[in-house]
Amino acid sequence: MPAIVLAVIGIIVFALGYRYYSKFIAERIYRLDPNFRTPAHEFRDGVDFVPTNKWVLWGHHFTSVAGAAPIVGPAVAVYWGWLPAFLWVVLGTVFAAGVHDFGTLVLSVRNKGQSIGTLAERIIGRRAKLLFLFIILILVLMVNAVFAWVISNLFVSFPASVLPVFIQIPLAIWIGYKVNKKGGNMLVPSIIALAVMYAAAVIAANVPALQIDIVSYFGGEEAAGPLGLGAVSWAFMIWIAILMIYVYIASILPVWKLLQPRDYINSHQLVVGLAILYLGLLFTWPAPEISAPATRGVSDVSWFPLLFITIACGAISGFHGLVSSGTTSKQLNKETDARFVGYFGAVGEGTLALITILAVTTFFATQSDFLSAYESYTIANADGLGHFIGGAGQLATGLGLPAGVAETIVAVIVVSFAATTLDTSVRLMRYIISELGQEYKAPALTKKHVATAMAVGASTALVLLPGDDRGFGSGGYLLWPLFGTSNQLLAGISLLLISIWLRRKGRNFLFTLVPMIFLLFMTLWAMTQQVLFQWSGLGDADAQILLFVLGAIILGFAIWILLEAIALFRREKPNTEPDND
Image 1 (cartoon, rainbow, N blue to C red):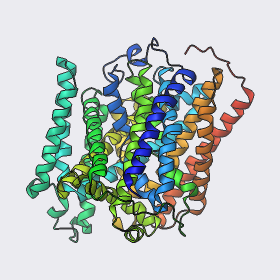
Image 2: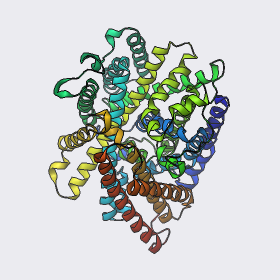
Image 3: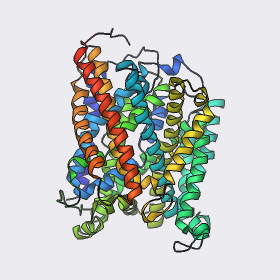
């Protein structure tokens, strides 16, 4: 089948979902009020609470949620064939992700910009809040480890991507200073910055001296470095150390200094990247054909229910609710902007997940080549991201870009989004540690630098966890299966909170309740399998123990929250609160 056919179908469904379904949700269910005073205005402090233009905020929100996860998940899930992945991405985006991301943003805005964890106390109770905060804390810790591993892996594999990624930092700081201190529009400077980044990518791809290849400094992949560790392990550790220093600084700066301008640059980068890939799909001749089977029977890991947690970001993701309620709600200028920022942000991520499916499934010349590359679920889990970069680079060459330049640009795009998610996640982890410090009367934890140091220190320790033959730096890889299940549990619980809130307002809550029931059923089933039986090939015994312990804790907390919420649902009557907040 020509891949362009699936692309057209998917984009049409996304467009109809935003045009009609999100409008219905905004007007009839969430009932947005253009005159509502948002937390960005009520608590404006110039650091976290900053009223922001909806396009700039969409750029921050979109790039914060569209990290590497909507690429890695679909690139792994095509192991079961392209059809299940395609249907879950398209339908999940329209009926689950958009409603969830939009809803958590509105819920937070209507409650003084509080995070989804804090809102659990008001909606369910204090015990539920603390349990929820601990689930979120574990999730963001895993996000930090997973994305630090992804970025380090890409820097090692594609050293030409390092220069353009790091050039973006001073450019973003310059834009933030120019716009916020001297006034002006962010559009033109961000486009200039993007042009500089891509020029650097082209130059670095063709000039080996500008490629920051740490592995070669140690003598190549087969060489042994100090302390008996291999060159690749040392490269991972060095990049992780550099990343953690960067995210420490980035997560404590006022959002206008780095976070907003860099994310705005990345929003343009994502649009440009998606345009390159979709245009490559359209203009490559002969037209790219999908080489993967539509469905595939396998003997190691069944797609049901694991598909729905393998593709988290790109269909629905609990981490999006953390971003919506943790940072985005504090920057929303008008409540009516929530539909564009929240729902359309989810649609944007769906388009990225869709092109990932198409890039991977057109990368291989024959179905036999695809089946050979996706021989097992474990292999798909380890190599899916590499297949995406190869497939995306192949599509980009259809527009005349040299193969080396195309792969470098794709790697830059993936790293940029992953870095955006990483420092947003560290900032969120700092918020959560501070909240827990307030709850447990530990004033030291409420201090910005103490909370940030704890977040960065724990994330560094986790990602450097050794395991399997990848050596140091493989902690993020080992945690990927658990990341998906805990992420989807968080999304289901967030939808539960929205449903209870809507019920109290006397509104129709079926549009959040139905996706909640589906998601929690699939996720609890998958997580129970994971905790009780473990998946094959996840690494050595130590890795199995880590996954078991973290998974059991999250599962236990989630079931506890659900039982409290169900009891609340049964004893509460609808419309118990005035419909004015």
